[in-house]
Length: 128
Image (tube, rainbow, N blue to C red):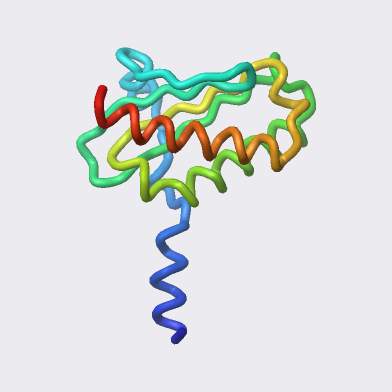
């Protein structure tokens, strides 16, 4: 694999600013009429956007996860999982909301649950 091929392939898994929900208007757009996918540990809200790619917003409240290092760990894992699965999540604005017990999950358990929810979201949103 040449350097150029590697660079182009690695770009596919980046998480640039364009792939993030940044403003309150963007978050409110998703909150206004979302499609929901949930379990005991987190809730994922999604709504179709007019872009050619998906965007992610994260809400990990201090009320639900007290320690900053645990909140940061959760956000890192969610971003990584989103990056690896964004090819199946076409033009959706997505908000990830952490629930109270999410801190007890290991990295692997959280990643497995996220991956299954991304797949469920991609399959069920097409029929929504």
